[in-house]
Image (cartoon, rainbow, N blue to C red; front, side):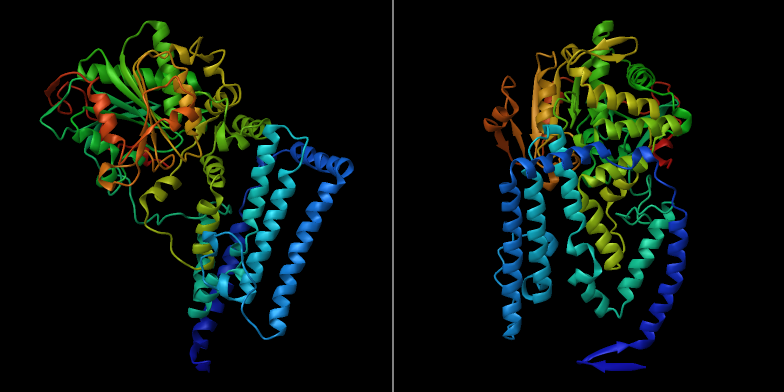
Length: 594
């Protein structure tokens, strides 16, 4: 049965079938929401103290400087009334074109209807006016210290972004057009996607960023040939098979971060840093960390250093028969590598020939964007939860980092999935992003308290294995790569930490792009360039001002630096030729544990 309306055919049978699906999905939706576990009180967001401080400062402004508050209000009222009057006047004259629109370009509003349709344009302009008014009012509040101001600015922006008209069906032209074009099927598919996500996450709304059926670690991710040659409760050690007839004598050991899984460095052949390193003629070992559960509650930084770093270093030396190796640490693993290097220096252990750091913070005096989550109200909550459960759940880690880029990692994916009814894309990097790991409770608290908050490594000394170490005790040749738009490890802070290391041989490279894309940046893509400057006596700002920009990936530059510190070439080492037992094929078993 069909109905012709303005030349478009609407299939009522399809519409009725979709309504029936909605009824069935609504039942599942209610059941999924009912399964949601209450959020622990300690993890319910910033403390009331922050809001009380802000409210108190705003009230003080009203008393001490009422003219400023009135000016804000009058400016907002005037803009709103003028906008309404312009639109109303045009409509009264039968003119359906929107009033003049001077709002800034915003990729959320790329549908042409935001510019041409009077309804959508009115909503967009009013949203922008509201956002500007709220932002200005908050930014002009006096009486807040710098830390509180940053946090208030951040959480205000979160509210502004959450209330964008694109996040609501009735004010999203893309979603409405899709619903009309599909006889409502897009909304049914969107509801189905929402229900699936809720059911998969115990009632929590976690938007699927990638098609989980499109990838499998070991099948089409993490496929570079190698073998697990050592395993303990903390990690599996993977040795990769050579692809060259000769290799550098000094092997390379990479420590990836344990807040994610190592295969970000081995997503697929064309962008695999692991394969590229092997192809340059290095004997490469990579640590694959365990995904801890409650039984790891008592594991702290001491265990990561002793049972992780020092054990892996000893195993690589034993397998390759050398006295010195080169090491690399990425993100949190780079921070812990610097601690390990200081400890080795104190012990008189010369096992490390050189160290490379990828997007690593060792000086936490400027915490960057993530600092909004590092005040006591959040860290106290994490500590309470760690004491209760024995670990810091991957769920909270993933959500925290997602909210640093909420429009890209929460709202836009939700719009595509839930409003437009699209299936998540088959995108390897987003699949990896969703494959996160837990942290042992003790280790998480030690890291947050002693590094992120107290900055002990860069100041009075970080407690580790019965002693204290400082950055000045890192004395091996160092190459550090930071990323220009990194929202997790701000490049300026990374530079400051390297500057404080005691090594007389330091190289710093600044890659374009962010925390992942700036590192996983193969030369073949010719996408992101990098900056270099040999003078590390400068401040970070002056360093960049005087830096030379280089087209293309930093990988070949690092290879040149590393090869000079990797000894002579020898016949390629075959896996197992040292008599070591092969425990499994790469990528191993730990990386596959959820």
